[in-house]
Length: 558
Image (cartoon, rainbow, N blue to C red):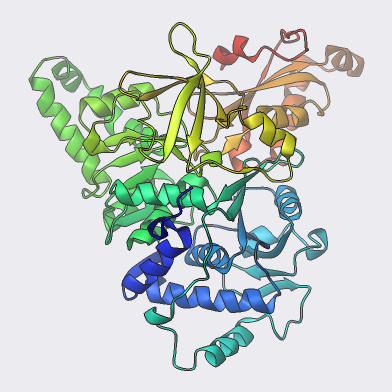
């Protein structure tokens, strides 16, 4: 546990607001909204007044759901500096999943984008005292006195409390030791399978500490934030590390297509870029592959010394496409395509891959570009912060990756069984991933013990949950959800031929029924969980004695 004041999570932001009062802190990209650290601090102070008016006490839960914007940032920081526990909810979650998370976490306040509120009613979330718009702070729905819980009433209370204004010298947050709970992050949005990761302030402080000490974030650094802030990766570095350092982050709330991102990069010229593999892979295929496949270039790339000229030109083109002023691109959230990674290393593009999980808020391993990251490795454990070892390694040194250190979670909220199963008897957190360590301590991921898949932005996807929905559809006996290299999901479906024959369906009608099933299931799933393709499988899947499908036999079928 980090007990030194310089590593106290709340104090990171008290110091930063005081030291960077007049500097730009956050910009809602594509709008004219930019908040200085001072303006953000004032919004946080007003939210503290709102919390008090709502009767929020220490360790009460406050949920936030919506696209990336400056109000989302203010709610998060206001909650943790007030002494409350923040519950971030991915905006892609369906309404019924969001309702489950709000109720399971026992949240008492909900800040939510207007569009996300459309499928929710206050009666469905009985513990919530008020739902407040992330768009413009207006109360959407109240179980409290509307005369007290509105923007004008809070503004009046603010003036009464600070008649001479609120300034850098006035910023003071109550002491919160790093042992206290900061957030509950839900790893899945499907009712009945959700696990709420209990993240202590210490875990967030460990990530921020690394962000500062490694030079990822520094005073004046510029970030383009397109990863969802409700996801641990974007939250820890694009947001928390950036603002602790005195940097400026541009928040993109729209779908991060390559076109939108390249425009943002050219305008902002970020000093570091955090990305998931899919974004980089798309840009690589669009910009680089067409060039290197042309006969003259493909020939030159095979000639020693001459290839260096081509590689240099390609590297410069790619660097300029991302703004031209970044020191490194950090890939996380999912594995990077080996072909893409090999080529990027060949042209000496400044890219490095990290490894983490929500249960570590998230970072476990990473090697900065100036320390020489190794191809196909996800780096070394964070020095002085995290430890990694391989449990029960085989003859090649491959075994389950287990970790411990400052960034680890406290457990799963209201789920003692899952918590117990996630730790070894001597306190190491089981990651469920297979890997090996080389003699220099670099970690290489070799596969997954678990069946969990990763979406394009690093979202956790649990195929069993989707399969359970598919198996309830007409004419389906059983199913298996797999993932293609482009991250799209494919459902292998074994039809219930007895039911098909009884209904007299033709082969064409069966395919139409499966397509209808796909559409119906997708209507109940988040956007990143959507089934893209259905393939019919002629007979039942091979199973273990426990009647579980042997998934490894089918991974190469998509």
